Length: 110
Image (cartoon, rainbow, N blue to C red; front, side):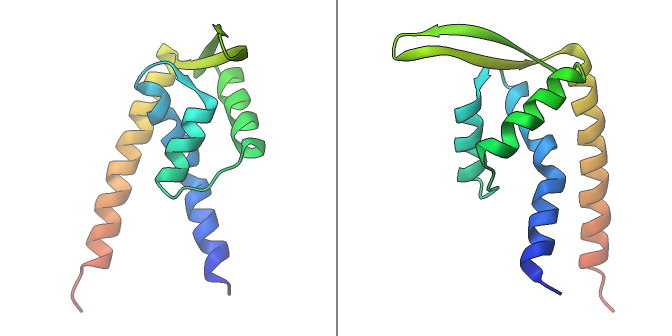
């Protein structure tokens, strides 16, 4: 069994949650999301991020607006919809429960 494969799967499992959290702070551009995820050592490429953003938009969880740029083409800035906020709240609750459960298992003395 390859530990790297398991690590990749663990990171993929929380990618959507992390992206929704980043967007929840306010309007954000995709390259800024990539930068923050990379800085947090959650490696993701544009080919993964853009399809995920499209799925989130199609699900009604995020929306975007085009903003003109002085240094190139217009940029898409993403924000959460009300449904996205509710969805993120539920994910946050699940995350908190998972962390608590995992900590209980990891730190149990035998």
